[in-house]
Image 1 (cartoon, chains in turn yellow, green, orange):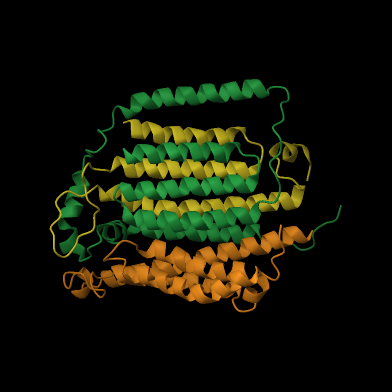
Image 2 (cartoon, each protein chain N blue to C red; image 1 turned 90 degrees about the vertical axis):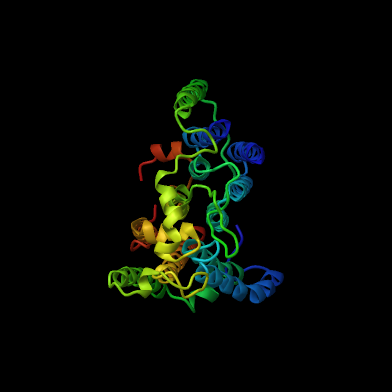
Length: 112
Length: 173
Length: 145
């Protein structure tokens, strides 16, 4: 229970970074922190005390395994998060090319 | 116990990443958070995810460092800076308060309800023949999710190639 | 920001020549053993993309642009998606091999899963390399202005 709460505190730190920072690269860093926190939360939901990894081996019969379903879903989520970060970075570089700055308050005032 | 320590390390590293003024230092602190996530996946018995998270975080940091050029802009204390910060903290505090009541409804940590997963674990080997059950779930039982992930990757490739193309002549000022 | 025309220093170039082939082979190993040990198609695809990106970072943009062109990489990404669809079509055919009920713990086991693994790794690897390539060209254009 306290582990879930620590994951949500990490989520809130990333959310604070997205809302309050002026540099676009800092906003992208905040989004990456939010995504790490959410992936961890999913995997920790499926954990079982004294469980084993869900991979069978040749000579032993494993009885109690952790929950494999959240792990299979998070596997694709991690790669999709990377694709989202790449698109955001390309948008940021284009904004710098057009306006000459990374500051989001200045971007609002200039007419392009 | 180890999971608590790794989560505290990640919270500390993320506070460093958020508050540092130099952009390259904060990107490297972000990679420390990613390493903590990979270690936590290893302790939570998910080796598939630990490998994937490690290499994806390396690629994310490489892409971010290629884009950072200048230092962080100084925090401008104009007008309503104080009110904005207090409002953000108040919102986050309310969010965590509601989250505490919602988290009580989840099953206890370490005793998940495994109705569908118990069936996958019991019949996974004989139905698919693969001994890595996570690959069996992600590429056989739930293959549509992998197909949709390929679609999302293609969409992001098209997005990046469209944003990064040359548009004729760049107009001079 | 350093000029990426000539790449990095001599030490980095020497180490890259020695290790980039090993990284590629390690990625292929993780993909092929996706159904026996931890790994799978997604992690292996990212490692394959990382080996090419390593070449590009160490030797500079111009040395790699001459050898690998962009429509070729997009062709490989689409090829991976087509092989994925072909593997799904094969599993509908009902032959006994594709239901995966024999020969556990070997590479040629478990039905369509190795074929799907290889297809996903080619798709993810080529796709991520194309994204990085386009970002490098965009960043170079930003520095020239």
